[in-house]
Image 1 (tube, one colour):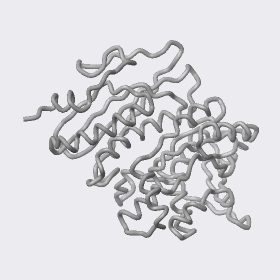
Image 2 (spheres, helix red, strand yellow):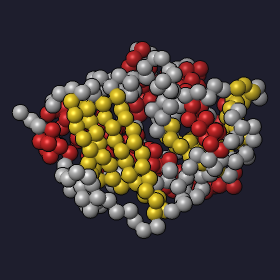
Image 3 (cartoon, helix red, strand yellow):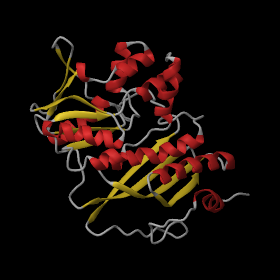
Length: 326
């Protein structure tokens, strides 16, 4: 019979050159570079809440690590090490091997050593903890936005939401866009290079996991500011092409989750530098609006200059009734 320790040794134990001691003891031994702070992020993915029960295990392994890499990217921190805790209903060797392949693939892309974790029998869920480094006092946090700052986002938020609606509700997508939306949902690409390059340029930053408006609320609260989005600046063309409905595209952009793009603020004086950084990193960025002085107030300036208030409540596991399942 396959034991917990056999599974760990066979599927998850790899060389850990950046750790003084990795998998195989009671705990790992890690050494942070002089003059740096340790940055730690923990994310749990639960079947039926964060992913569908029949999700492909390789993609699930990738996503388990990627969502925490995105957290470190938002702090302008370099990921170094990861631990992984798994609750599994059964020791399905083929499934676990595919999951481990996705975990190791993501770790390899972002220079991460898997140094420990735990496995147990139970309902399917996965919990990754990432450890990274940032020069002392140089982390980009949520509390630095100032009135007059520009508001930016990377990539194309909303694709994952359209992909999820396609899977759960059968909502149609254009044939040449469905693969892209499903890839965004199942295999997000953390913007680590961009996050590192924005260190000292962005005044505040976070990653978008629960929707633009819901996550932006955290910056507004921590920075004691408001924000106004300009509908004319929002990158909606690709979403409209995917779903064929401008209203649905706007809702996916503002309220869809699982994008793992970077939402950040910066002085208007940084526009040229931000454009250069985006080009160098190969990641498109879009200016969405501006930071305002009225704390907590979030508005959308519509075409024709009509201004309306936006609901800034994103997905909340203990307030939202319906399961997001992705």
